[in-house]
Image (cartoon, rainbow, N blue to C red; front, top):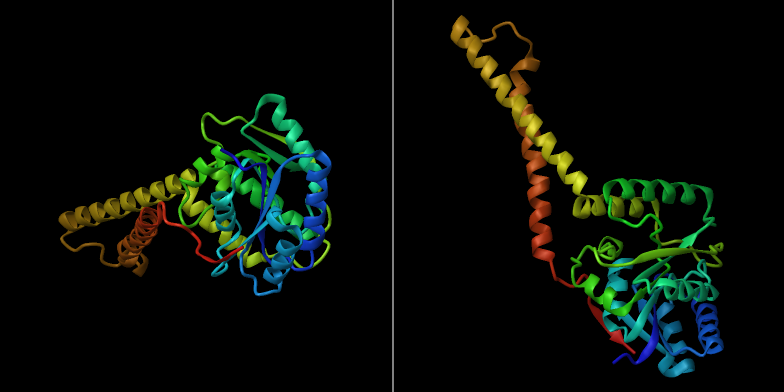
Length: 308
């Protein structure tokens, strides 16, 4: 039995300056709508004063607010998994802590879900209000992920409303390196989106630096992209074919001339070694990725230090 209708799950990273206003707006929204809810903050340990703020919010709002503090910085999606596992609501709402997503738009997500009993509704941002460079990198990353992960919903975002049972089923498939939106579009799930506002960041700075975005993208492609695996496999096969073809050609020349390829350039002499090295590199990456995924399947990608 669900304890509340809605669980609002919010990963927190450098949120000390926005959490109080965000909480006030969320509480005001649900009280005005007369809907039962809980607000779950997961402190992803940025090293700021966020946990103290969460404690003060717990003291102020009582059982409406719950706080979970992780032992290290595990990343947004692992923090979300922690929040989803601890949520009791019939529906889950996920959003960021930076006030770029408006609590008032939760109404739009709820109304859209009711239209056709959707399992998942994404908040689709009409216009991103990051700086120009961040807008460009976000656009390019989204395009690349759509190519590499064909099943990914085109309007995926961090602002979501999802049935609790669907969310919990999805996280059961996650490994320690999680990208939740890969698991949400399961075959039987009905997914839609609705346009919502995107505001400028009111305080602090984004946790996603360019190196982090690149690292995040590479990990997603290695762990989840079927095209990436296919391309890697074809490259390995091509290199193997070229290596065998050159070996056969060299052997044939030796049989015919009994001298090998004397006079050929050094390039031809080292080509088999280079091809073999490339094959070994690609095979090592692939095998390491496979074993990493096997070892981390069903392994929690986070650990909890405090729970209030």
